[in-house]
Amino acid sequence: MKSHRTRNQDKILELLKTLNRAVSAQDLYVELRSRSHSVGLATVYRSLEALKLEGVVQVRTLANGESLYSLAHEDRHHLTCLQCGTSIAIDECPVHELETQLNQSYRFKIFYHTLEFFGLCDRCQLPQAAGQK
Image (cartoon, rainbow, N blue to C red):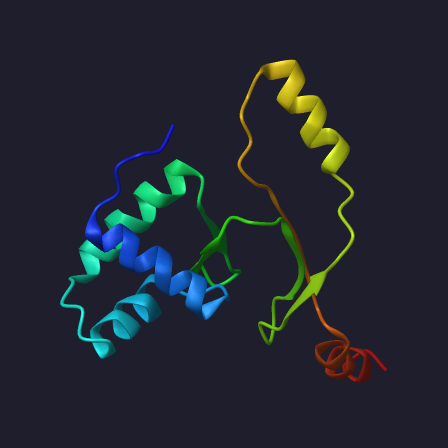
């Protein structure tokens, strides 16, 4: 079942493929404008929402509330520092079996999943440890 995408949705999808990293809607908007695509920020958000519901784009919300969009080609998992914002990708996925079980038990089509752990990275732990002495 191929859905009918708008021209703007196609442009955003192509840009996400080109960038090959997670970016904010504002960054996509700026990048599209720099490439002479006249599109409004609200249109970028609407297009991203439609692509997300289609299952081709995934969104990851950072600790500061910012949403980052990327292609939904693989599951990504992160350790994110609440103090400096550093985000470390982890390769292991402890929930693939659970995803398969949920797919079968609930007959729910899962496009992707995210797994995020929040805490303090080793650099941000140093000042805290020094202050506890």
